[in-house]
Image 1 (tube, rainbow, N blue to C red):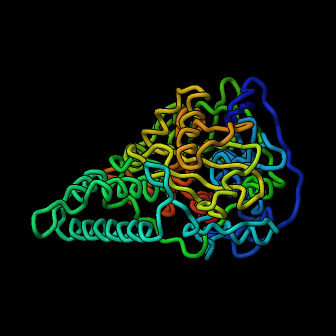
Image 2 (image 1 turned 180 degrees about the vertical axis):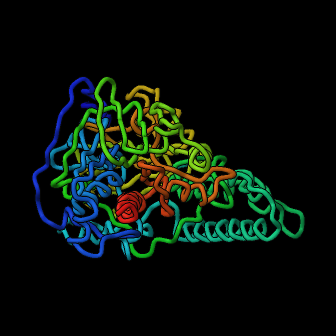
Image 3 (image 1 turned 45 degrees about the vertical axis):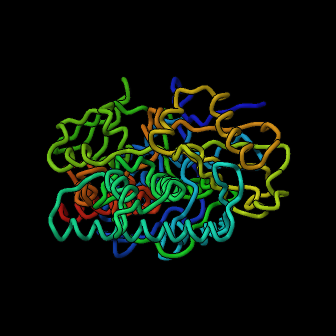
Length: 489
């Protein structure tokens, strides 16, 4: 069996400079937000000759750099990895199937600039129909339609109970608690006659729902999520879509025309009244302004020092917000055996309701989207982190045990690809969630220009944890720098 691992951290010793040639104008002039120039001429007079360093070549950094460059600034993007894209990366292990080891979906295509750009650039997307699923019980039997309806009713009941508890706590002014604590109360609650509200079977189903609908969504155990704030992001309207050809298509187009230096591991950022000095080991970079798009996990690690030291609301935000882990395991088989299964058939997703909630509960059928015999397995939170140090054979065997419980005597995969986002030194996790005591004010704490330093990234936007939020934050950071140039004029 051939193995591989999504890393993106190799080859730190040498520095490569990527000068991506200017492509379509649309890849450089991005939709504007707060502080946007009213014309190309005005933009040029604002930023002509202004030097800006952007830390990070993920979508936030690229969006910020593209807008600043379009306004006339001299922009250099510094990236620690040996590639661009950050937590968006279509891994090239399989030449006929560029699978995404980071972000996979556009969540809600309506009024979504990522979806708009994908359409403008002719990048194909495919809708995900979450209703097109098959769930298997702990005995490996596909649930009947009646059982599936029962689970959906339980999902509605759980959602309503959470909403009611959020409203009650808001009205009463009660302090925040972990979603997991409330879930345990709900799980073990009694009916009007004092009898257990849920039998053992329904309790198992509820554990599965909590894991797949919430913990996978927010990349964290329910015990780490704020009941008041975990789902407080603006609703994303429209279909969820993924990229059969890989999300990196977006990154490549967004990066066109930008100057990007890879394998530059930033160690310090010093700002003065006159400019910014960024150190990467012994290498020194000077600029008039800096946009920091380092992931929340990197900021929390303290690996990069700031002078003067960060203080006030931004430090509180870094402490209060949390970085979650959602890991993926891709398994490629000789054939798509599941497509011949009378129960699974053309289902897009398979669910495993086991006696151990949180372990190998959800599988995405990539054969449905790209015609290749590949299954994608998800794990989140504590269980995902527990696999970080496990060897590949152990991880693959765990997934195969569950799949054999569902599909019987199936072949070993020909090859596989796994992620370890929690151990990635340039991310320290997958994306941000609101932990106990965190509020949306902590997201907005990053919004203002701090002298010569602006911040961007998915952890700084109201649409936290999404590519749209990251992109929007990059444009916002560029906007506050452009606005400051106007105020100085």
